[in-house]
Image (cartoon, rainbow, N blue to C red; front, side):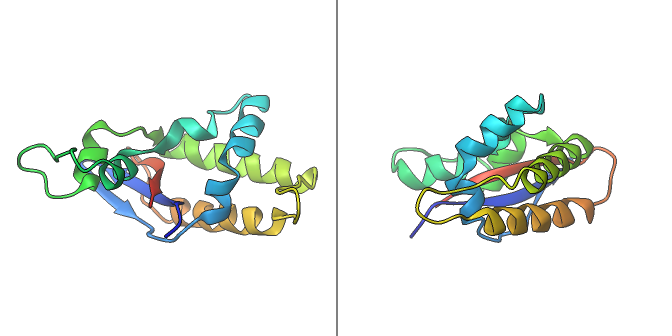
Length: 141
């Protein structure tokens, strides 16, 4: 079992997850974080939520009474980025990666995987209805 990122949107209190494993984005999150900071964008790691990961790795954690899933807790207490700001951030990040042919990985270059995953996440986010939508990546194991 590997750790990956899933793209999520929040509408009110409802989380909709793409539920597609984004291994390249997870693996290179620190480099993506450095690039977003360099570009003056919201830091990549700051909209990666660890709610699900914490509940899957700590047997002592319990969901609050009345909650049945970590998505409910993430909706209430998770880290989120406003939807239009997320689209702008991911598109600028993608443009920079393409224009500068940024390399991802030491032994093999996973540039194409990172680009493909970013394109798919942007398409998922753009397909969601606008006003009030929020976005995050959940770290899933």
